[in-house]
Length: 313
Length: 272
Image 1 (cartoon, each protein chain N blue to C red):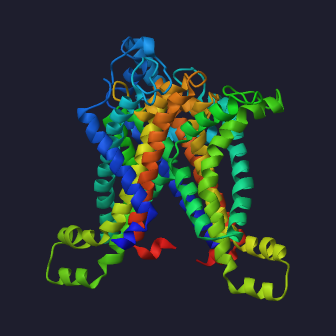
Image 2 (image 1 turned 60 degrees about the horizontal axis):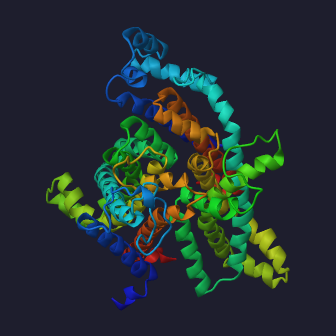
Image 3 (image 1 turned 45 degrees about the vertical axis):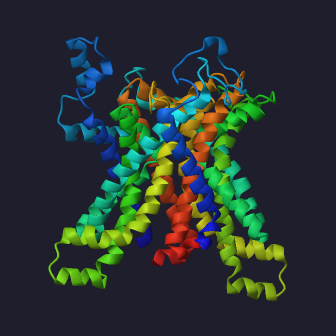
């Protein structure tokens, strides 16, 4: 219990600091933010009304408290470009981003885990060199370039795949997949290249422990040794990695949406930066970051469920 | 020396970095074609003997633009690392050396910065600072700070109780001098490794921001920006993306290899 409370306090402190940073950064904008947003053609009346609408005529801490309250109630004010509530815009775009991210996550899980187990069983000098090269390449290749390569070699050769735009799930499942698989692969491939090695290391570490030797000497079939005993015990480090992956997949989606012209949160964020639509930028940054921090918090709690020893630390 | 020759990461990484560095130096004095000279009749020509990487949508030589683009990559990477190291070492050093609530305050702040996904923080900062080489570097430098601060802090915590620090304190050496003259050289190897990784991340992030149209702006050449332009011609001229994408990947790969090699050489225990 103490462990969970400690984690919860840390989670709240982190979210509070993140909100202060996200709010504070936009206070150091050079010049008058209202004038910057409206451009040079705006007249005094427009400027005053926008200033009032944004609440910029009030003291800073009040503005901050208002904004934080808005985060909880979903009322983050209106986007300047769309004259629509920020939360409505987000809700509109969220399904696209969530679809890409979850599909990518599923691909990573279903490939990286078996691959990690597979290579852990066969280790030698040559495969070690190959594996570490694959990992380094996975870290070095920019996702947006990988996306273009997938478009060139897969998207343009198979009619099934659409290389831009989005079809909602409700319209057609095959249609949705045809627009989502390539972006999801773009995010997943580098993640797999980097993360399957963690699975491998984690399994190899377990393999050397005494209990494995004991159950082997009892004559248990290799399958049971691997899947029932070793895998179970390697779950904690693996879980840590997948906590990290979620954060990276969410961030990866932001860029990859741009390659495949997917109308998701990432595209909304990038266009709102170009249009200097700062309430929208602030809201998106805050929600994405809190989601990621929350996932890490959940992963922390899950550890203690899987391995009760952690609670004692 | 023989021992190092067997280190594939060191050899390949050094060759790549040295190659690109040479390319950058040469590009200041010589490029096969004028990087801004347009030649519309010869636009989007696939790689051939005259233009080994082909020509872009204005008929400009892609190879020459790749050469000049390396300047931007190195400048942004270097500025980022300078900002990251100066602030990171100062913050981490003070936190580790003084300890107590200062440590707690500084490190919680660093944790909060690290809680943002890197690209989200980068986008938020360029939204505030605006685009361009210097602003991009400042944004990326801020992102590099927390990691370097963490590394510096753990080094300073390790060393502050060491006997040579005690001795220095006893004979009345000033704390600042102990920090920078006595402890810093001892933790420099970890900081160099962290800085070289920050360099690689900065180059990738610059390419990403420029690809999104929010980083380096024309007329400054950038590989990420070239990829953005190339994307419009993906169907007719897919080879257009190969040179800029390949350049980013190979350079970043070289940096990662080199940073792995430095880590292995300076701290043989980490090799496992």
